[in-house]
Length: 109
Length: 113
Image: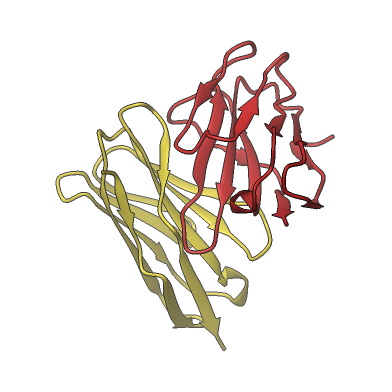
């Protein structure tokens, strides 16, 4: 079967750095997405990785290792507004997105 | 309209009733999707459409139907609602299928009693 694993919840302090991990086992791989979802709102796109390595975009970076079936999202200089759920999703061999259950990130002052 | 809209925002429905959730986008995106999101589970794809006039089944299509008569609209119909269809439903669109960023509507919270 297809499986995306993420921690259910993480807590971090304002101004700090946090790394959210995602491991996957899917039928094929055509890229990995990270989305942010604030409570009661729609998911919004953060990043897309299809090749191994680190993609940096402002305070957010995303890393991919295809051989390990592993990705992480790195958030720097955390702000209170970063409190949200972070969703990892893999594009499988049928070009359909398989979603993880999301990681709820709680930022404390 | 800016982006992607859904209606209604929320609905309480008696089991056995028929319900259509509406989704409209003004971005001229070719691909559209319907997902359901349940607590503790990832988003699950119900149906998708890669272009107007075509539709396909996702991971959890049973009990749902869709149509794609034009580029902008992608309604989702529950022919005879059951309590297990209580969920938050998100419509999304992308320029094309595959590795393109998906843009999500605000969601419809549906409760089936």
